[in-house]
Length: 316
Image (tube, rainbow, N blue to C red; front, top):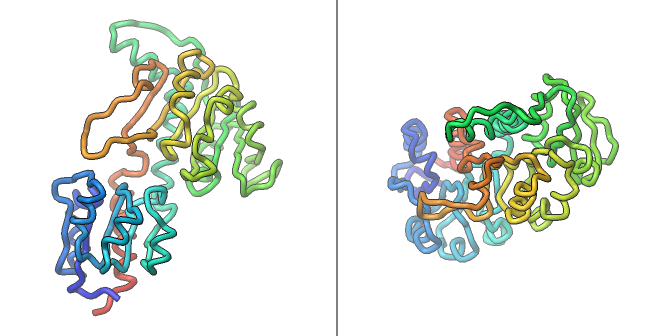
């Protein structure tokens, strides 16, 4: 159990920026160390930062076996966010360390951004904006609205379901692929579950909402991208690594895909604000720096749930 004297470490930069969240945490604990410099910690820095902590709140940090073994006092690891690909969950379990997680808290925020990306790319708004920034006044070539076209959703968890509910308003034809669903199953609102091959072959746009696992690593490699409908759109708000970036670069350069948008990359920067990818040089590629789940509202909700994971084990 935790007490008000337990040492708590918070490495999440979004949490540390919030005065409200810090104040809420300080209602329960007296000894808290914050990531005031908003650093991306290396493995050794993370170990030193969390030294003697009984509970920690983390976001994008890599919690490896070495980190876990180097924190003998650790009782609870609370995740600010939903992805677990950066955490050795098996080793946490082996060490009897509680994992606090709140799936679905930011699903609306992610789904809203996915919807905006779909519209942005299908209407060629981003491509034409790039032209305008170079003082070129051009008109549309293959602009499409949402009604009547086929949108594929890969991964039908909290975010996928939320996105599907938004797309129904536009009267889009919605296909989903999820290995947990039966093929050709008609879901709520007329959404149809199909095979992976069918979603690639028939979708005008595909939006990805799956975790990064051994099975989803490079799920969208050269073969899958080449199987996508010519002129279609790919949107990735899941994890870098689900899409093989070299293959995506090729599909964009040849024009097999008319465009792609991504909030995530295979190798996101650590301990620096500098980043470059060849994809950024493509005029038909739109990107943001991994911000899909972090609106003001979701930061607060994620932080409150992270705190709850600690106070669930709190003893006055």
